[in-house]
Figure 1 (cartoon, one colour):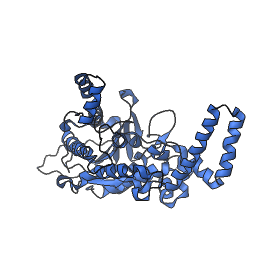
Figure 2 (cartoon, rainbow, N blue to C red):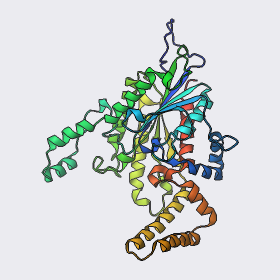
Figure 3 (cartoon, rainbow, N blue to C red):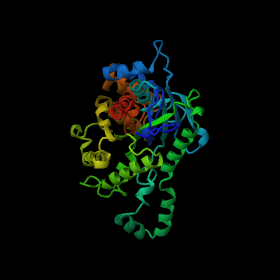
Figure 4 (spheres, rainbow, N blue to C red):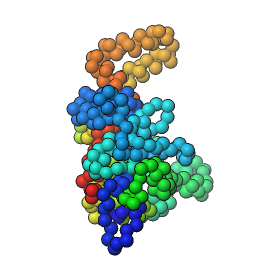
Length: 396
């Protein structure tokens, strides 16, 4: 692993005691993290997540502020929107509410494993694809497939202009990602004031957690759900790994792929999920495929996030959504007054859910299913799994 940020007067590179370990976290909305901090309480209901919660909170219930882990996070295009400091809650998706993503558990656990100061550089933007937004330079320009071209011609659109517009968007967030990483590396003391320049730093791992926008894009992947339907995603991700390593000058930078797992294991899908089974299975296989490429064996690993899906919480959320849809219909038909609407919902909840289920819903869910239900329990177990995986690859 290439050591960066320190000049040695010897012909060999050595790991210096106390050297700063730097990990990069990148992706789209699930790397941002949409778990509202109120969902932390739900973690107490499962032994697997309860132990993680213990590292998030002090004995008095206040949030832990990590003394040995720092973070710089961006999820907008504005430089001034960067958030940085010691790792604690609140480095999830930016906005009016306080959220967490996988960074919190990842940072806490990876620091325990390496027992050195840690810096996280998190670059994540919601709703972004690999095929266009994060497209790496070596993948070349985005090429419209025949089905897309046929549709554009039938609409009388200017293919040349559309290709020009596409080219302007292609790779934008790849370059924003690299630019921010380089910015942080040029002045680490801005983020971590106690940084020891003599000890230097090491780029120790890259965590990639993305995929939703590619998985649902039937236009770019017209054969999704069929064997090989997402091969182009695999090909582009291979280029992405190579380009990141080249641009950061770390040829064998440990790389973790967080494989999309919304819905849980495909072989356990219920009746309502089975129509998506082939699509989800095919995409997950394509996300995992780079780890099988000979040049990546041993330095690219996958984390199957489906393992941390909470099927009980998902079922409760689905039931509640059906009630809300029914209420919305009645509201639209103006069959209920405002007071009746509130009573309708409360009565339905009382009839359809136990008190424990209501508690689980109110403390466990804060967002949509495609954001892993906005569940701290799910996203924190994923973050720890990322740390566990990188620990098996890191030379600490």
